[in-house]
Image 1: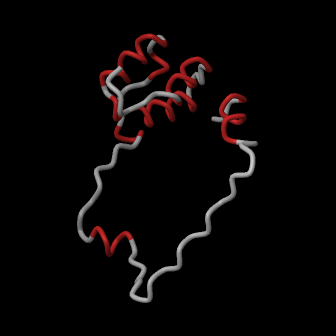
Image 2 (image 1 turned 120 degrees about the horizontal axis):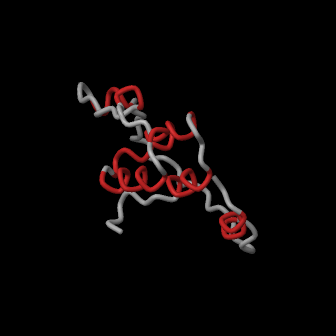
Length: 102
């Protein structure tokens, strides 16, 4: 979600021009994700495995849950979009920083 403030920050910064990518070395061989990761399977955390329904809770309860379960923010955001789609909660979830402790 892009707000007007974010848009102004990202657009119209003067004469910044993109830097062309460096050419790939002759020894470059593209590798697929399957070949790179091999038999490792990434842990999936999709909404189909999720049993918390934000529509059954108040905004404050959802915020408290997400703060305690930081990895669930994407699933909660998707469920909220499909459910009640409360604008204040959607904005908070969209701007939630999973890396910070505050």
